[in-house]
Amino acid sequence: MKKDKDNKFYVYRFRLYPNAEQVAYLDEQMSYNRFVYNFFLERATHLYKTHNIKFNYYEFKKILPLLKKGFPFLLNANSQSLQASLKNLDTAFQKFFTKQADYPNFKKKGVYSSIVIPQNFEIKDSFINIPKLKSAIKVKFHRKVYETVKQVSISKTMSGKYYVNMLVEKFAFTPYIPKKALNVSTGIDLGLKDFAIITTGTDFDNKESFKIPNPKYLVKSQKRLIKLSRQLDRKVHKRSKQDKTTPSKNYIKFKNKLSKLHEHIFNQRKDFLHKLSLRTVSDSQVVVLEDLNIKGMVKNGNLSKPISDVSWSRFVSMLEYKASWYGRQVFKVNRFYPSSKACSTQDCGYVYKDLKLSERFWTCPQCGVVHDRDINASINLFLEGLTVLKNTPGTAELTPAEYAPAGYQNIGISRHTLRQEAYAFRRR
Image (cartoon, rainbow, N blue to C red; front, side, top):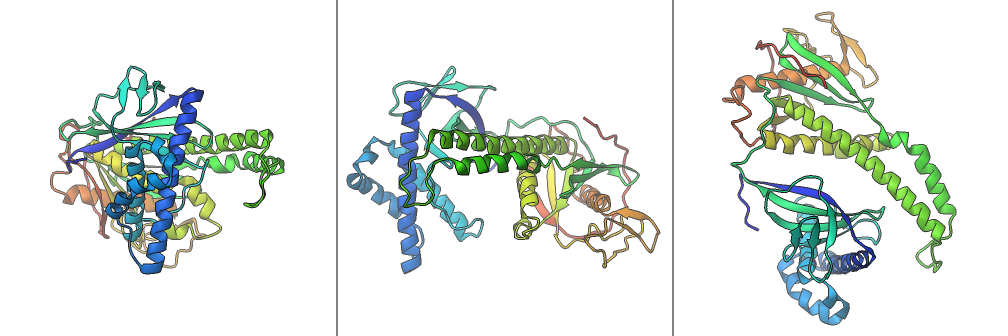
């Protein structure tokens, strides 16, 4: 697929409602793709560990037709989907070798299944036709798709729901039209007690700070999760790999209940992050936050669950790609930048080096101002954004109609004394 660097790729996700025959077909196709993925992963792992030979997509692609001779059931699979499964494995290895992800894992049955269909699909009215399936699958379209669909993939969640993901290409000359937000800087300090402490405005005298409470969806559902897990464990099922016990109907029933609850928590969290990230990007010209070492912080046993629950990485990712849609800019300051320790009072800048994590408030010995460490950090990040607005040519004059692709980058430490026009933050 030829890609234009200025074009944006977007995925529309719609719910599928397959009948019993279609469910059986989709599950069968997903099992074929899972088999091919695991087969080549096992082979690639052996070559890598034994002979230090890295994964080669093109060499394995030549073996794929021979695999069908050894395993005739693969003749019933869509050949392009099998190639796409192999390509997904190649992507996983590329991320591993570039240290973007851990070593690829084997796909487990019933955890998360999907199938990619690059070509020969047809979308008509409220139905989709896919290769080797005689009947069309019903789709619930909750929005119109105006772009050409490049490829589709069908996924199955642990709760048994099916979704179709449609990849489209949005061209550079058809930008989103965001709300007007000129000369507005926003500093975000991410936390656990409060999800985010935000300071936004146009200058030091025209700013507003507020806290976004942590919704704690996982914590609120913890008792229900524990209860369902205990009930599930008491049902008849396999206790080990060697155990041949057939899972009872009650076990399957409670497993589905547990899966639906996990999915509900995931959807709650994702909805919260989407709404907050969209609001932040829409109302800001520049967004500044810290470059947190989230991977290292998760290793702390006491903080791993709360950090995973707030999903900082996903929130930052949403800010970045939505900023590119709306012509905004997202900047990350160095993780060693003393945002909490530096006094945010104008013309002060004192750095309290001995500030402990347990100290939520501290008094500046130089100017005497009492600081809430989290609000103080967001103000310092906000001021860094004002510096960016002043020093970046053309940023302050950027209007919504003048679409410009935005990205993120690291910025260093600067001293900030800026005054600009007033801005009234829109509460929603």
